[in-house]
Amino acid sequence: MSAATTRSRTPDRLCAEAVDIARTAAEEAAAPGVVGEHVGMVVEGDRVVTHLFECKEFGYRGWRWAVTVARASRAKYVTLDETVLLPGPDSLLAPEWVPWSERLRPGDMGPGDLLPTEADDLRLEPGYTGEDGPPPNSLLSEQMAELVEAEDAEVTAGPVAELPVLPARGSIAAVAEELGMRRARVLSRYGLHIAADRWEESYGAKTPMAQAAPATCVSCGFLQPVGGSLGQAFGVCANEFSPADGRVVSLSYGCGGHSEAAVMPVAPRPAPPVIDEMRVDAMPLRADAGGSVEVVADAAGVDDLGHS
View 1 (cartoon, rainbow, N blue to C red):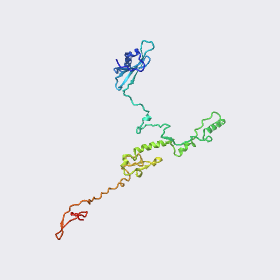
View 2 (cartoon, rainbow, N blue to C red):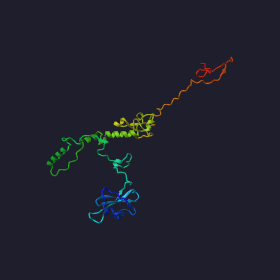
View 3 (cartoon, rainbow, N blue to C red):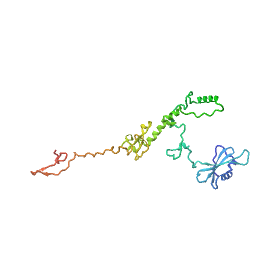
View 4 (tube, helix red, strand yellow):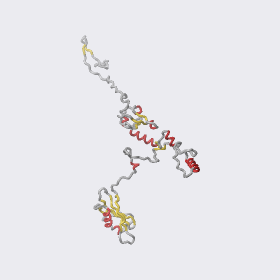
């Protein structure tokens, strides 16, 4: 007899005994030989019981076939409700689904891929502000166009032809186009900050390469400045032999490919000779012309007899 898993209510006797009916339904829904032992039952309600069977199909370890049976009030026969495959407490499950916009990582885009940005992206803000339309009394306004169309209808016989599309000159978008501000949105302060943090982490002063560099990029001739506020702290490396070639680098970054690296290192000076003036060295004796013995003093001016 298999162990029964129940809730707060007592299972209906006929529904609890309908194990064979539930097994037959599970075997009809599953492939042959993948329905295992009866592992329990769950009381779903009054005269409603779900029987659980072990699943032996490869790739579904810990899953269970759940067959729900029910009995109508005062009925003597049990009917089948549904048969599903459900995960058990120790089953293997796929990780929680994450939208593509949240699981996308730098470097995932390939040729032909498109990455649309949301309208409320915090990294961007409008490149220009104001209403994109002329004043009401302007010759290009919609109200003036309707007035012109109405006047033409009074003097023109037959239906009024469609008016041509009004030119965009005079709108803020057109002025921005002429001034070179063709971008509808630009980086916000938040977008600038997260970009600066990302670049500083990859090519900043705290990297091992910068710690061992002879000088920083701010004095390197291969640094190409960038415009905007980011130019105060970053530039582009143009040294093909540098590990940061073509990358945005911090001005405090550095590498061995510095343009002045050949003249910056100073040759180490040899250490001065160490003279021990506290020890007496034994020196050989020599005789002078008169035959007397002369003591030769050492570098400190002290002879072997202790006389200076």
